[in-house]
Image (cartoon, helix red, strand yellow):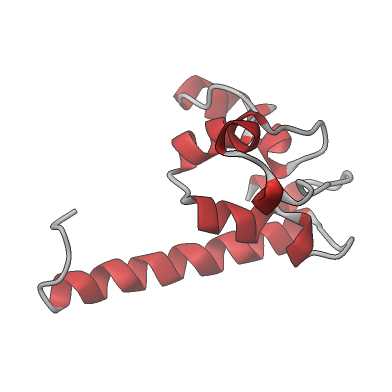
Length: 112
């Protein structure tokens, strides 16, 4: 909801797949979706420690692959908006829930 309401500029991270593990974890940008999240006092009070990619991965429980699909420039080509990031986030969350349900239903999950 926070991203959908954001009317300002949003910039994706650039070529995250070419950065080292430590460079990716430290990656940040003033106009990134994670910067928008970190400006929210409720998210900070809930434990969002900062606006780096590492902080976002830890707080939101994102895998590197999901973070890349949500936040890297190679998936937006200059078209990143709060609404389209929110839409992608919802779709990935639904896909993750469906995957976890299927694992549970077939006995292949780890009983999360």
